[in-house]
Length: 267
Image 1 (cartoon, one colour):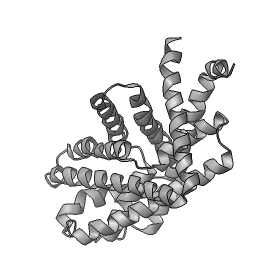
Image 2 (cartoon, helix red, strand yellow; image 1 turned 90 degrees about the horizontal axis):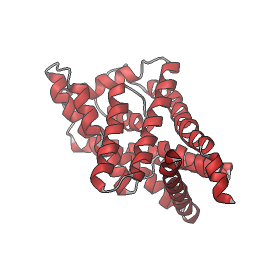
Image 3 (tube, one colour; image 1 turned 30 degrees about the horizontal axis):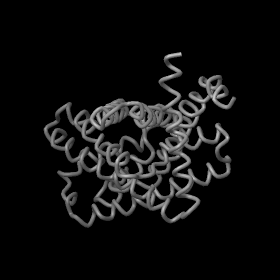
């Protein structure tokens, strides 16, 4: 009973958020895509901060390179949550749950997923171009850590990428879901950054974060092991894994385990 009382208000917020996003989509596809672009640009900021920080430790061959990157990458989720970005991975949870509740159709859910993914791609491309024009990553000594991580991501076997994608978006969706029940911006931000730290340090795969990281790596002076083939090799299974993590382990799971209480609300 206590668990039901805790989850029901949060699930109600998820439903409201999904319907708010749908309203923007129905009013203007351009506005919706621009919000999606903002989300991947915000992630781009997180990527730059994370790998710039980690690179100082990487140059000294310190084991703290990856933990420091994981710690600072949390800035991205704060920007998205408070800056109004629209992220594909979170949408796999929100829209699936709203559809399971009968608040929207599956065709529209698919259109929303595709639109947010396209917007995220465009935002990643624009942000990568802007980083290129700054010249901040022109020297190889500055981008060594970023390129080494990208190179490894492109060589991971497909099935491993798929399951890493599932686990990643499970945590990322929880990073947006759990704070809905917390009071005050401080606890909300701390919990968000904690969950993001967990997925990053665990080595899980986030399609949009990877998208931004790959885009930046491709505009830099990179080795031949970093290629468009590697981008597709990574992003396809990771995206599918993210979809299952948000759609099944979050939306379907919470809808199913709370269905008796949801049915009571209808009566």
